[in-house]
Length: 107
Ligand SMILES: NC(=O)c1ccc[n+]([C@@H]2O[C@H](COP(=O)([O-])OP(=O)(O)OC[C@H]3O[C@@H](n4cnc5c(N)ncnc54)[C@H](O)[C@@H]3O)[C@@H](O)[C@H]2O)c1
Image (cartoon, rainbow, N blue to C red; front, top):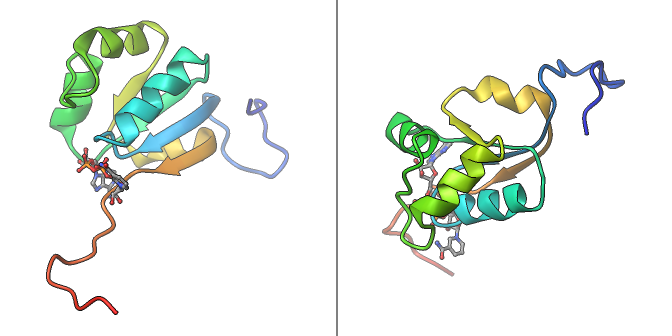
C-alpha cells in the first residue's frame, strides 16, 4: 500500500496497489484475479473503447465473462486511458504488444 506521502518523493495521489497496462487477453484476466484477491487495481489502456466498455461492465475478452468484469467494477476496479495513474501505483505490470514486426528475420 502506498502511504499518502511516499518517502521516495513520488506523487502518491490516490493509493493504488497495481496498474495493469494493456487490458487484453493477458492483462484483463490478470486484473480480474488481482481484484478477486483484494488488490486495488486500475487498468490502463490506449483504447477508450476498451476502457469505457470495462467501466460499463462489458468484457471484450472471450475468456472473461461480463459477470467477472461487473465483479471487478464492484470491487473498485476502474479502467482509464490516463497514464497519470501510474504515478500512484506500487506495482505496474505491462501486458501490451511487444511491437515486434510481423516480418522479422529471427535468428
Ligand atoms: N495472448 C497470449 O496468449 C499471450 C501469451 C504469451 C505472451 N503474450 C504477450 O502478452 C502481451 C499482451 O498480449 P495480449 O494477447 O494480451 O494482447 P491483446 O492485443 O489482447 O491486448 C493488448 C492490449 O494492450 C492495449 N495497448 C496497446 N498498446 C498500449 C499502450 N502503449 N499502452 C496501454 N495499452 C496498450 C491494447 O489496446 C489492447 O487492449 C504481448 O506482448 C504478447 O506477446 C500473450
